[in-house]
Image: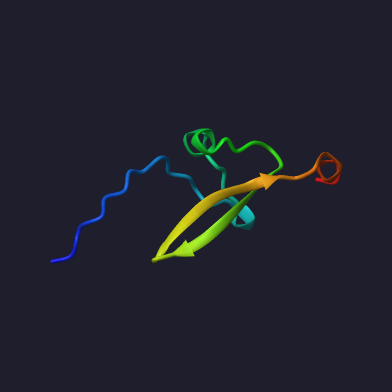
Length: 64
């Protein structure tokens, strides 16, 4: 038999209008995600992985 993989759930969120969701504090804190940070959504082994990749430069933030 194969190994059983256990994952702990950090948070549960709801998908709202326009398919938006909020990244909860339990997820933001360990990744140090802040406003205007860029994150990647990766589909890997039938799972979604979220990874912080950086922060937009200050000049770019003014257009958001």
